[in-house]
Length: 448
Image 1 (spheres, rainbow, N blue to C red):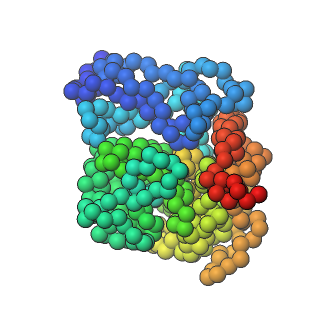
Image 2 (cartoon, rainbow, N blue to C red; image 1 turned 180 degrees about the vertical axis):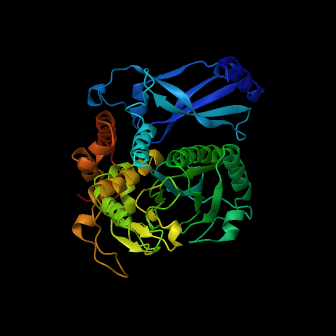
Image 3 (cartoon, rainbow, N blue to C red; image 1 turned 60 degrees about the vertical axis):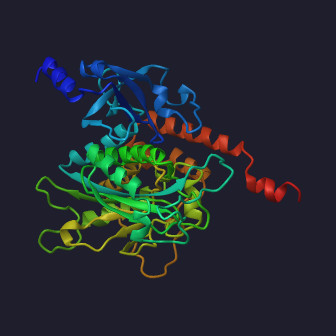
């Protein structure tokens, strides 16, 4: 198709649309981008932003460019094929273009989280393999909370009452927010996200959405877009959707479980022997890699100071890298399944993680184990003791130190990305340490 015909096709698709949001994930998985005129977009206008946008901290600060090897030069935003959508939740017709970051020479950006996942996937493809993944993301729905010193509260349902207690898998609680969930599902359909299930989780006004197994880049794109539209639609309904790892004390944290398997060019699951239907050595090597590598990469799955509250208070949140056959106390679970669906569920990532990085970490660690033929320990059964080397870090400080010296990270990701990510996390940690919490004022203000 010629460039003229492409522009004509886009113009027809964008008829009645005034603007296009060109959106990309920064290192934290926060949507960043530009809003441009729809006709300019259809005519192929090049969209650029400064590299610093990709390493912007949650606080709005930027690390010094010397940490990640860039000056304030631009990168290019290119729409991911198949990821231009009309957004039905906006007040006026608008389109959303999910983008990838390219250097000016056309190469994938060395600072982009999506590019880091792409690098890992390409290492599988070089072996003739294709990873398949699915995410399960948990979140809380609360009423508006303008005073950040006050705890979150569940919203009023259609019956005029607030939810009380834990209502795991309660259907009535979901229909209590029926208008919100109806628009959420419509929004998912509009941006091409198949939804396998929506359910009430264990926490107070906590829910989970399950995605269908597919290509890692596609699932990461869908998970990123889901979090974006989740927040937008919640606000439209007078609610806030919270993907913090631990928004409420004495309540379960919110995870982003990742189911993963690998198929060869014939579509055969490499974790299962086609003749015996038993697990293959590659399956054991993969689990060995997860056990050996994910401790180093925990900062990619638990990126924030709040992430470690989920591990320190382990209500349904494993803080270990033990593995098991269908035991949810372990960080790595092999669910009961038919042999051709044999897979590993990584239960370590929080809902606050950047989906591109969480997927890159788990797939990268698994491949690391295959490449080095690593062996896992014995599967955990019942109540078990966690060996020290399989216990996860419970502080952001320790997670930063582990990533800094990680052999696995340097093998999988670019040097610029690792240094930029570390610089970003150090700035955020410094900001947190600068703040005096209500707990400190409550217990130390008049007693010491």
